[in-house]
Amino acid sequence: MSSYRRTIRASPDQVWAVLADGWLYPLFVVGASRMRDVDSDWPAPGAALHHSVGSWPVLIDDSTTVEEAEAPTLLRLRARAWPGGEADVTFRLEPRGDETEVVIEEDAAVGPARLMPPFIRRPLLVWRNSETLRRLAFVAEGRAAG
Image 1 (cartoon, rainbow, N blue to C red):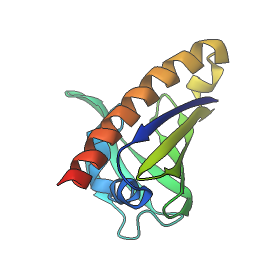
Image 2 (tube, rainbow, N blue to C red):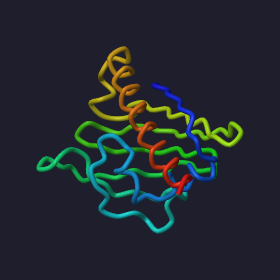
Image 3 (cartoon, one colour):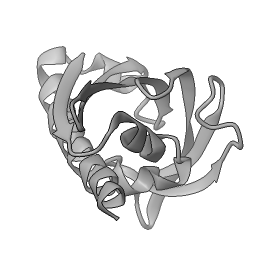
Image 4 (cartoon, one colour):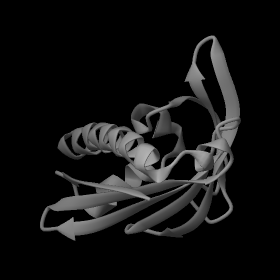
């Protein structure tokens, strides 16, 4: 499993508001290129984001489903990106005064990506998740300032 953390200059409620708006995911999730639909009860357990991954013209339609949600501190997802497979992704939000420390944990769960040795998989996930949290910070901090 890969774990990465970043302090965001916004409250947990403000960061959660970004995570709870499924239409925003392509703004901060590395690899997500567009949203096709968001279940009306997102981010309730069982709700899904219907997204595409890749770059035009090679786009693959897939989905991400909520496994567990405890606003505003925990969001656990099963992200699908076939033919690569599926990943378990967890966002943990921890208050730090007026800021929030966000921890993202991710690992391949099912499919070909799971066959990649962990010593190769982890550095790629750290890179991806550091950029994802950098983008999440831009969105959450921008909304908090506005």
